[in-house]
Length: 231
Image (tube, rainbow, N blue to C red; front, side, top):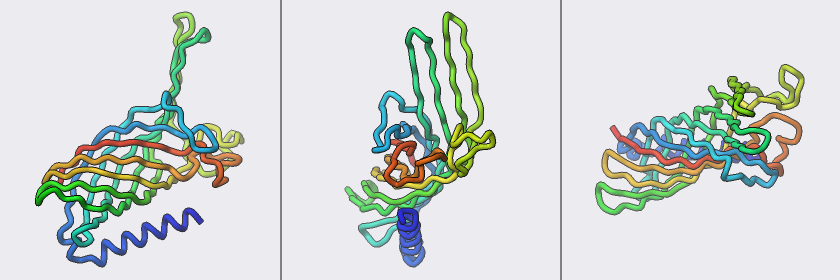
């Protein structure tokens, strides 16, 4: 049901952008890039541990399509680097472990325009996103008594509960992710500053119990800030 509601919202917003021919003629497009602070929920109620945030990046193309004088569709195609990191320093050793999946993400946000003048305008909005995993790495390192051991491997993508070794969900991420974004920003003519908070709504790790809608563990959370240049 949740997936159908999100897909329905995407279709509705996309249709609105297509039928508004005048708005599309006044649309502007550009590129963006910036910083993400990413995390993954670690409890069934959707909580995160701030000490496990991972500094990553976002980049992509953007489009702003007016819907009259008050609203606009803000969409595009993003590369979103997400994940989480754990650090330790105790009697057993010192090190870190991080997972860093990379997604190709399509957001469709409905924004309310808050113009200051003809060139400067702010906006706030929200909307759904869909994403597909395309790359990523898992990496860990540990130092004990001056001896360092480490490992790095590519993320395994798959939606099956059982991986190739027969372990349930071990070392895998689901290929497809969906969720919602809350956005805000200011445009200064050809330049802009854009912020968003991505709230994942699907459990990213295949395995027993992760398809239960009541279980909010292993969901992406990402706060991003980007600079935007419009053509």
